[in-house]
Image (cartoon, rainbow, N blue to C red):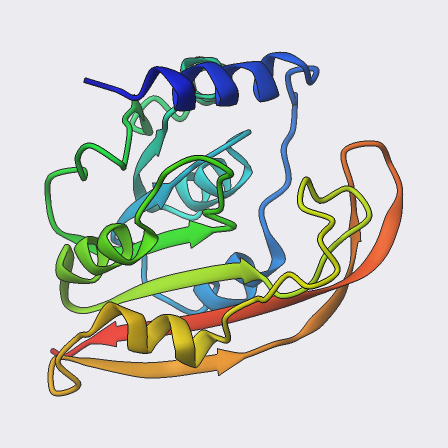
Length: 207
């Protein structure tokens, strides 16, 4: 059974925003994936669907999941309108279960929530869902933006290496291909811009 609090919260977040007609993919996804051959991809916490739609347009077979029915229904409508009917959009609470199947790419962008979610378990499950040679891309906030819901000046942002260590994976089975903290100029929901830091972790499962 899905967490009512999570469903209610995230449905409210998405319903309060106008439906995106052409959502943009995250830059950390495009810079990482452009050189990779298409395969099966899983988008965790797909939100407005920019990443899932971009991957599908590049030839990936995409499964996109989100706890919000509003987000999932909007993405399904956009995929259909753009002729991307192979894109699968599913409502799923990652606190309760993980999507089935094997994937060449699992993308988890800003998988943060003020509600209960054991991220380490989710990301460990994602690593184990990779096919041999597959990659897990985890992009986290590394700084507080003016529009962040947590404005605590003492907030700590675990480094990519900290996140990797927290997954407790066998290093003979998964290798860190990237762990850094690049800066970029971001635009918030209200149109404001600010310099933010991304924490980027890319893991590759042994072939």
